[in-house]
Length: 279
Image (cartoon, rainbow, N blue to C red; front, side):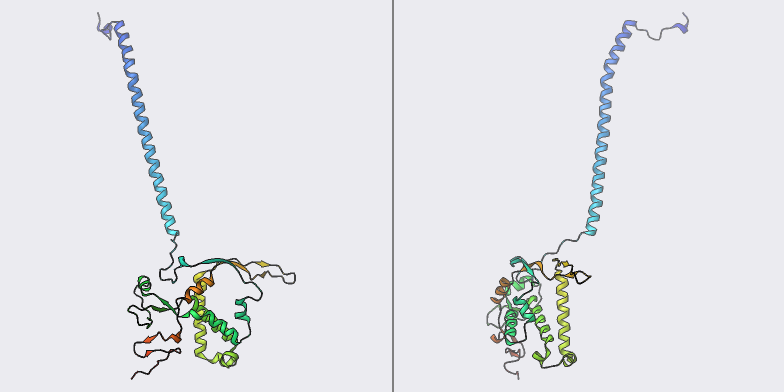
């Protein structure tokens, strides 16, 4: 027999059929496993890619937010009383009529008006317990009261009373004849007085900017005017003034108590002058 006619397989046709069947049965499961493993690998790669992408988006977003977000500062611990201790009310301010604040500004200069202002300013000189002061003021010093105790209180003024003092001074400015026996021109020429007024104006400006009151003031149309006309009343969140004033009164003292003693000049009287002149 020529080599061209030698059979490819030396097995019988039956054997070949059995082998083929056996081969098909054996290869089919192997093919499924390979496809399943391949799918798992692609799924894992896709999941990892999605996680990495999401983390990247979160990181970029965080950086963007950190660039634009500034955390709100907490109230300074040195505030006395601390803001968390205060009582607040919702009040309608700017009301027309005979209110006590309206009388303090628009009332005719008189001993009665002056007494009302002095009552408002009575707790100007406030005592802070030494333990509280030293725990919150970060080594910033202040004058101490001379009450004879081993660890005397510190002498301070709450900013609100300094501002009230400035407002009272501006009321004096509006009536120089009554309060200083001066004309407008003489008052304007008093450099010391005008310097005090500018100091007060600056202090009030800083307080207005610091507090940034965002309560809404409305407008209305006047049939006789083209421009919108502003309204005075406004609903605002306010410190309960009666509570704060009484709280401070309980912790204040008068200069007449003579609780201030200069290290050189000695005890001071109600006019902040030495009771005795040092030798």
